[in-house]
Amino acid sequence: MPLYEHVFLARQDVSAQQVEKLMETYQSIIKDNGGSIGKTEYWGLKNLAYRIKKKRKAHYALMNIDAPHEAVAEMERQMSIEPDVIRYLTLRVDELDDSPSAMMKRQDRDDRRGPRRDRDGRDGGRDRDGRDGGRGRDARDAGRDRASKPEDEKPAEAAKPAKTEAGEAEPAEDKDAKPDEDKS
Image (tube, rainbow, N blue to C red; front, side, top):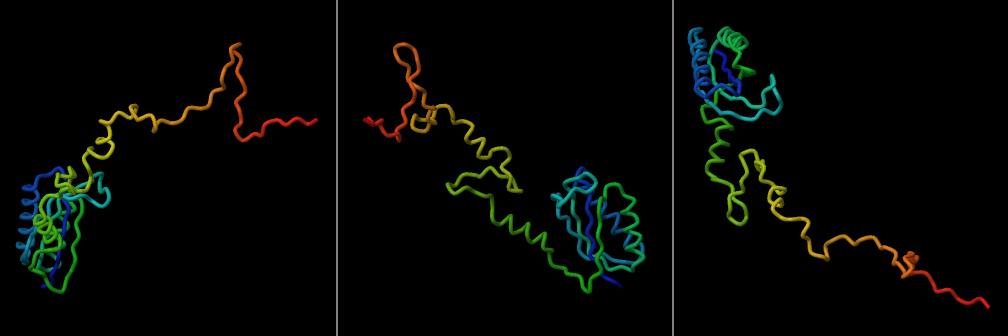
């Protein structure tokens, strides 16, 4: 029988248990039509590369299938009817790999590293996607009073003409101008 790898994406607002039930439903469809399921993996709720049906996240699930084409076609038909499934992809492969997929290996690697830390040993306050959760540089600087800068950091004020005793403004002196010479 042909071998298939099948991945489907479920809406972000369904729970992980509902995704597991969907997987069981599709496994029963394959088994009822004369096929068998190798491994199944639930990859979790992940960000999508682009929006699909106005959704930004989805639950990912993988199934290795050993079944006739008719069984896979029926499973895909059922998925196209199901409103909780937003995308699916079935690939025919030469052999099925029973080891954990690349997505599961990556998750294991991330678990081994532990939480991220700043250089000084504090928790960086960043979430899994690398965003700072609103505690970025601007938030750290917000506590500083920008108006209380030292005098040497304040911008120089524009030169104002000096006033004479009569209240008239004297013309500003040009430092580069040469003094008037008598032309006698």
